[in-house]
Image 1: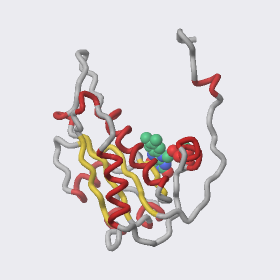
Image 2: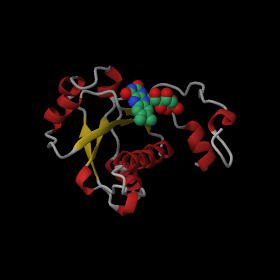
Image 3: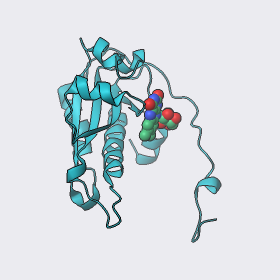
Length: 170
Ligand SMILES: Cc1cc2nc3c(=O)[nH]c(=O)nc-3n(C[C@H](O)[C@H](O)[C@H](O)COP(=O)(O)O)c2cc1C
């Protein structure tokens, strides 16, 4: 798909078909994540790929929406702060790194006809327990992955005039 068309067609999919994802297709999506740029090329992340079949009950403990567990795969993107690049003033760029990784993943998925949804509003404590995530690793975002059973709605976005300044903050 042409890039312009890809970014217009990607949307947050919140209803999934039960169809499984071919492992070759999954690899292509994960490869797109691997190629993402990260600050100082530190690649301070790990993705936990979860096949949801038989795990509905425990996964629903951290985000109680049917569509979340109906996606055949959910991915938990974790940051490893000690591996990430930190600016001189102490600002860690790990969240930015992971956002880029997951955006690559999401767009690659869309190109292959797969749907995704970012999920930030999950129970971190429950996730740590369910996925055995150690204290020095931060689960940052979940992403569902599966074939869409819903349709794209209207894209609600602010106009460019509200989002862009030229030369100076206005
Ligand atoms: C960082 C981030 C966190 C999000 N967390 C959630 C979430 O917890 N639950 C949810 O249903 N959608 C979540 N979303 C999806 C947004 O609501 C959605 O991307 C936005 O409304 C724009 O719609 P679109 O993705 O269909 O273009 C999240 C998106 C981002 C980028």
